Length: 422
Image (cartoon, rainbow, N blue to C red; front, side, top):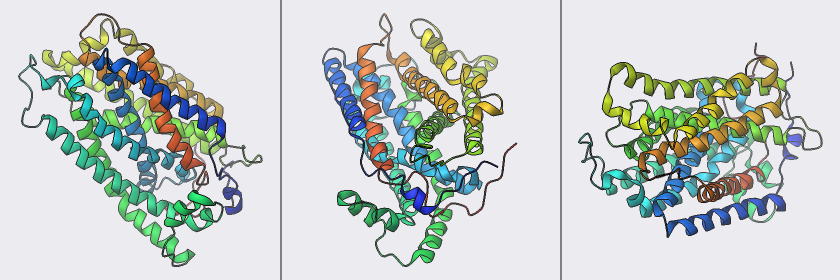
């Protein structure tokens, strides 16, 4: 069996302590490029600028929350195999404060994106539910509560390791990490206390995630096509974020494995299990997408064709087929068999393909519902804004991963040991 256990001292050596200057510059420049791209576009074509902001917000917000939920799902499912990946996933939660600020800023672009603010052809709209104030107040309160809940979960996930991590830092990082260790009652008592809290919080966090993100998907995604109704739209949205999170974990695990003096943090069976999860949810997400179409087809519901028609006809048809190629057409055969799943480099490649695919897919979730002019609204402005969002996600994520070790020191998730898969 090629599963590697890492000692506490070894895990502590994986703390970077600071973001490398090169990557700090890269992500900082990406944010500036995004801001410039938005500023250049919003004056002349505000709808195009806000469409890109809207789709990127939906993309990275789903990834950020999935990172927090990753550990909660391991707890509930007794997923011992994935506990060593927990820190890589949790880091995505560092984007949530940025996500909330961006959510508030969407208010200023709502008039350029939300079609039901003006006259629409269909009568199948719940006007008492879909009001501008109602949508933003409802989702703002729910996101604030969910994010706070997620940070409470992360507090107990980090607390058991906090004293050891704080001792490795100085300056502001030490001050922040030390906050997690206030009122320390002793190692054994604190680990048990954190484990108990994680066990109690995890099921509620998962349910809250599914409910809140379903409502967010309905209000900020599905409603952009007035009259279209899909009961599986919520899972379709947040499962996509979950799959993107798995892709990021695969990419970062490949980057950090054997990087710290040759230290092997994950073995081939660990990557095999991660690959199986990626493969399974690639199929599941595609099933959800197809399920929306097949019900409309065999049920003969013409008014709901309004969602699929603009996505499968010019000018967006090529983007539709591109998203399906990148999310299913390539990952499915690439992950067949055992050996591809055991290769961290191969999983990282598939992860990059999936992230590119979902960047296209989230854009397709928004733009075809709104764009009624000639040509495809895809070019330099969309690329620049997307790069800006990548920087906004990557910068806090890098700060997290350079503050905490890449694997947990004291385990507070479901006690047990993973076995070797088939």
